[in-house]
Length: 339
Image (tube, rainbow, N blue to C red; front, side, top):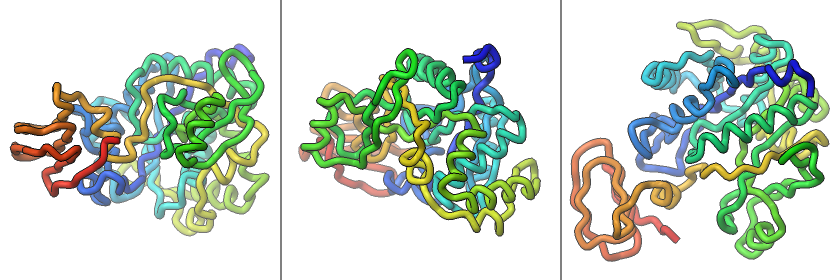
């Protein structure tokens, strides 16, 4: 790795446009889960930004979202004292075009930009371990790799895709042998026993390399996205992608567009208490609990209850349940399995 990459800063690209429907009713289209304080005073969006706020390693972040969430983004940035470039998508086109737009924007800022694309709604409990993995990833990205972060499995999960690590590239970094879709329980157990990693869906890459690899698959979409960035407007400080050009890009995930096709994929194994918070069961698992396994966000009194989760931003409530388990929100009660 060249000395220039040793000192180069990583540009965080925070993906913040999702609807977060899996945590209904607390998470809704008008205020999705990345903006909710699910585990304390801050949202996962804010925690994600703070995780990559060390100016010795990370550059000014880029946030990509849509017009509906633009003022929530600004409000939550101000609350934690972080400034960012905020790009607005005119419509959702999945993670492929969104990440590509961020890569083009980053490259316009720094010609040899290395970008760290992160979901705004994930949880990382061990920030130091995550940052150490970013440093490993920076080394690999600097040698021409598109790096994904593979989480060391804590159990044979069926809700995540998996990554099979291949040969060692450097340090802890491996080439990716293959990606696999979400398995059934039997395959998941086999993957864990075989040393596979959970696919976190977070990536680090040289912007130039990602764009080159994307062009091999769909040059027309890359050109359309580049034009959308080049012809973007400015509105109240937001960067507004040109709608017609961006809409011409094919809607596709970055996994299908690039990661599963490139020969430059690498994986950094990491154990950092990661979760994509994809269900109320995950929220309950990640929450602090009392001796009976009950957890509350907001004020709640539990009577004869076990393994319950109560989430609210408003009034207090009393919960009584021997049935295992239940989740309550301030909008509506739902029974959710905890396993």
